[in-house]
Image 1 (cartoon, rainbow, N blue to C red):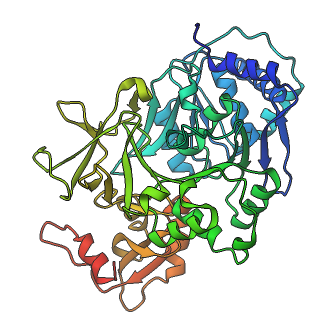
Image 2 (image 1 turned 90 degrees about the vertical axis):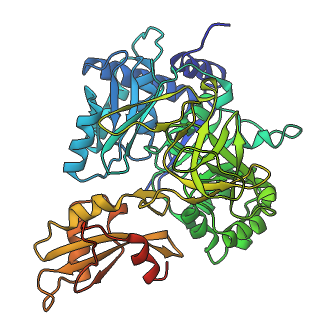
Length: 489
């Protein structure tokens, strides 16, 4: 059977289900417009023709600095129709950070918020007769290295339709009772993240997307009820905000076949709350990374007897825990998590930019630097995502980047940024400041306002502490662990 490009796949769906809804947008202005499969095919072709007129061609990268929206989805589909590679970029970055990231991407065309009227205007153009094209890489995802160095992770799998990537993950546990198709997938995560973007693969599999422009817990439950949503992926912070709604136990969540939780380990109390809401067998918890070097997962009913685990290797993933010398560690001992998976399972990845490559063993295992251990049955327990990295609300924050931004404040002498345990965010970004003049220190509001002018919102400290001096070693290093411990963990 011939390979089916993403471009041809969207045309097939439009021919098979022209008038059926494919994508609904839950917009900030209260509207909820819908696009049919025919709309998606026609509009993405019109946009592809317009992008070609701006110089985008086969193999080129297309920067997508757009919010969750129909325009985002149409732009990605248009790129694939030209044989180009969509690379989503966080749309609300400060100008200096966006410029740095765009330089790393090096795309000949970048679409941002200012391009929305232009994208919409392409609806008035003729529909071009586009030749079938296959993008050499499926997509890119922008991220930051452990030092905050911008990088672009390219998925090197060609943009060829493969039903394996559209099968509901939970069907691995439900072979005798697979999830009914098409699914109605609620998109909560930003589509510039790997989890959010991957819903487009499900769209190509024939599932329907309900795309939230911005997370809103109360509205999400309304949407689940109104459109009979069958699945969504969320961070622990998102799940907590939904579970905290005062009337949640009286709401109708019966349409949910399954939910997937990732980004950070889920607090046990929250797992139990969601198990009460929808049943533990409908919850999946997973551990993975944008590089797709492997994935572990377990279902909620498994988790009940292994609380804190993020599962066993799935889809051919092998897990190894190694010490600092690269030696395998026995069950129960904490070390660095290394994963290996057959290339056929995910494709592969490559980096753009100056970020260092992942460390790899001679046997092909790779690591992103996370720490954990295996139990005697091969279930993985995640101890720390990285030594210094803060996971706040499911987003990765690198302290060094925040410190570099804050140290430029004229009243800041020294600064260290740590993550403190927080019931809302998992970890909140906390800045410890030594002022130039201890008798006239800057206020917390001033520090936060300064940070907002230089950092993306999720990186801005939520709390600020003023101290006389920050304890440093002779080598000027800070013991972050000691600072965290002294503040309650």
